[in-house]
Length: 497
Image (tube, rainbow, N blue to C red; front, side):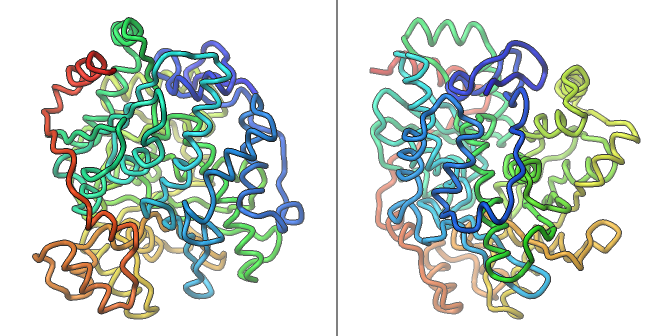
């Protein structure tokens, strides 16, 4: 399978696209043509998560042999990397709503599902491309990608990874997880800025010929761990396929019956993977993009205008504190009938003036499948409280944003007679403060003390992976200004042994 840029240009194979991450000119790689398959329940129902993974990965990475894919998948998804044998279990809340639990991996967040497999895809791509340079992975994180990427790539030979995160823009537990990360090839840097500042700086580095030459002179090449990379994006399709199968197996829906999906959305990779799953035959009726107070996506799906010229808010769902969603460009490509020229025009407007807008007809077509809504911090806490009191089920704040959004919608935007799956993106214990507030626990105490009380109150077991973090020493304390990211990367390259 060949890949091209969302903005047009040369074709590359999957190994080149995986290794390099970003296309020339700053566009994102997308398949020249999506696989022409129509996945059915009958062909999927007897497959394990691992076998489903092999089936999906083969569609998008045709340069790999069946054996190479099988080995990669079995290394990524097993009982040492995930604590639930289903990998992504489905929890039925009531007759109308279920949760797809994406948080049973090593770092307790949905990013584990792709970042457990991605390192193997990257190493295979490096081998196929006969690339001998050291790889430097640069990643920006709003909370969960950082730890999952660090865990996935730690101590891999000839690969180094540097993660940048907003100093005051992640939860205490997310920061603890990153600052205590083990590995001889990892670096974690806090910035005085927000996620968009870090992501934009990294995109400049990836697109800069000067930076590429500097890296090349030091026998280094750049790659990415964010979902701008196809090796990160396409493994996320798997859990939408498995969720459909599990909904049918549980008797919640019938084979071929449509269901809705609500996704807490920041950088747009998660919900985009679901959109592609629908293109492959999974019977998803409507996608709801759920935002927090940084509601740039919710506004777009309601008005057709994407305007990032607005105040940035630090919320209690920090992984969604994003104003410039990278994978949104890929979605635009498909929403606008794969018209690269139109995408290039709109993205140029967005990057130069901070705003893009689709026309009335384009918006109407978009709203047939997508809609957006937001919930603020108070509504998020109230959702956590309500669901716990009524169902004794504990949600993290991102999942709570999605649930709150679901509750807000009426039948004009979402058919609630159709079963809805909410993609639950993180374990609630990663976010002690909003959970404590919802449960009436003193939120001013030490985060671990708060979590002990939450565990005692709810009966939810303290996750083993957080116990490991609790007992570890802090290794990283770098804090730099957002304007110094590029200089930091140059020095890091220079000092690489």
